[in-house]
Length: 359
Ligand code: NAD
Ligand code: IPM
Ligand code: MN
Image (cartoon, rainbow, N blue to C red; front, side, top):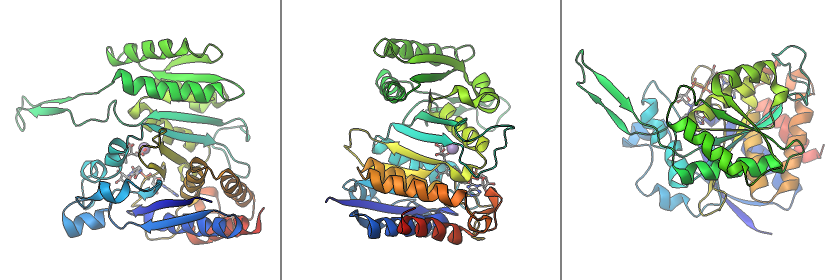
């Protein structure tokens, strides 16, 4: 039985509140299954570390992390003390790039027991994957400000779409769609307004489609695609999008399933040359930090995706069943964003207990 080496990086804000609940669930998993985890807690990659050291991470951060099998990550960002671009480019975005985690896989699912903000939708009606490009696109530091501070001020912010970077995320999305019963792929585009990169991206999608004739492709402009996430969520099976479009869609999709507090993500380096990173879609939520009311499910589900990636399918399935059972259970065991009254801790304990009991 392999020992999985995991770096545990809570980060900031509610990252520090939901991470202990994921660790509680992982503890229950280790008791019930023959899963062995070697957990290394990491206090840096946080704005607290920045306050003490003037940087988000130590200079040898890469050496410290690159032999880990996975990174379990909470959330980073404390804009009251560190500008968001500094904290995020100094931690999470660095991990994604330096560890070439070019796939950001974000499942969107409506669960039994969770009130849906869309009228008349039931579990099964919203069940799709967002495959988000995670290392290039609109997320760059290329550009500059000219005539800064004058009336003539001009700002240029470049995007980067490489053939290598686009083809590999499109290939992953086609493979995923091809493996699912519906074999349907939505390609997010904006080739009417974004006149260079997006028509080119559509062309790369067409070229990749030639290798996957069984997959039905639906190209949609990002504006109407967003509307259909709300109005016709059943249309979607796998959605592939650029970095920024995928970011926006992956808050909107989970919002239609009741709360972003449920949504997990897997930042994957599929070749396993580097560790992959597993984290909630949500951020550090300064507005609720310190109250012990954050929903821990996004963090716990992310830990389950980590176990699945590490080959521990049974452990993954057990966590998902425990989450499902808790979501349909007493309201005293779910957090307020789900209409309940539980604290973060109580909900984490409820899920961990169900993992231990084997629901
Ligand atoms: P956010 O996701 O932190 O919060 C948005 C809203 O959702 C808030 O009202 C918050 O209370 C609520 N929310 C988020 N997670 C919740 C949970 N688990 N349970 C219940 N409610 C929850 O987004 P934001 O306010 O735009 O960003 C806050 C900080 O987090 C910023 O510094 C931002 O840059 C950072 N951020 C980090 C990540 C990350 O580390 N992956 C992701 C998004 C935002
Ligand atoms: C996410 C977050 C990050 C992103 C931020 C914090 C840089 O919003 O993981 O969705 O935009 O990728
Ligand atoms: Mn986001």
